Image (cartoon, rainbow, N blue to C red; front, side, top):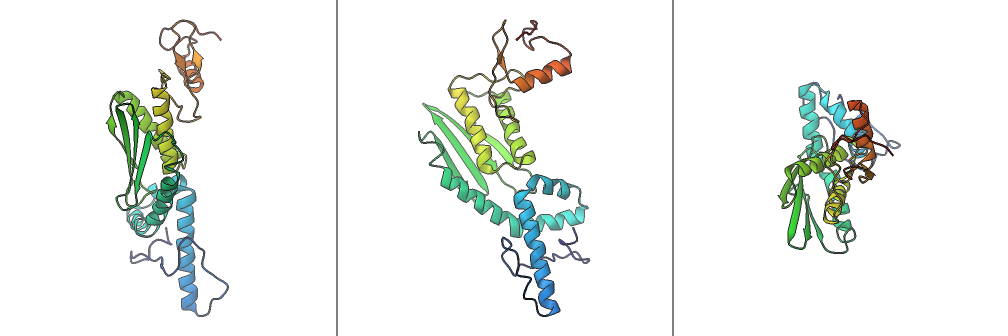
Length: 248
């Protein structure tokens, strides 16, 4: 936190150099040049940390004293978030045409609006999700909104939302990773794959598997991880739905 604020509370990181590149410390003359170089180095370290380990940086940020957290938030919003967002938008824009050759998925990304919009069109059905990024992304959580979800239940959307937030907040996933995870869930729904009756998602949010373990009585299929967790927490070896004894 010391690199983010001076004793008087003003921002101390000088922006005399490109934060994406480390300063040259081999040619320092005066003490003033050395001080500026150290500030540039501090800025570079903060940038690289936020870009590479956003979930760890968020944990550090959430434990900061309020005044310091405000100054860090302002610095990231002004100097780091625009750089990271520009890179992610470029990646999404470059991949938009290659990840879906059928033309059913369209992705719009805007650095200025800080929004990523993905729309999936199948026959006459249109599903759309919008990722809204805070000014200090990725310090603060992303807002995920299902703006168009015809034919998808509220419970299913909430599970998809949770899976995307888990990927972004806890697993250092990129914005493109989140969109692709949403697309996988939508693909499986249109292909007729039923969601797991325990977690209400098609793609498991941790291991990205499909529901494959089937009850021999009711024929419902479950994610293996969900089913094993159900067995351990319920202390039963029965189907979560029909309660018939489970056997392999």
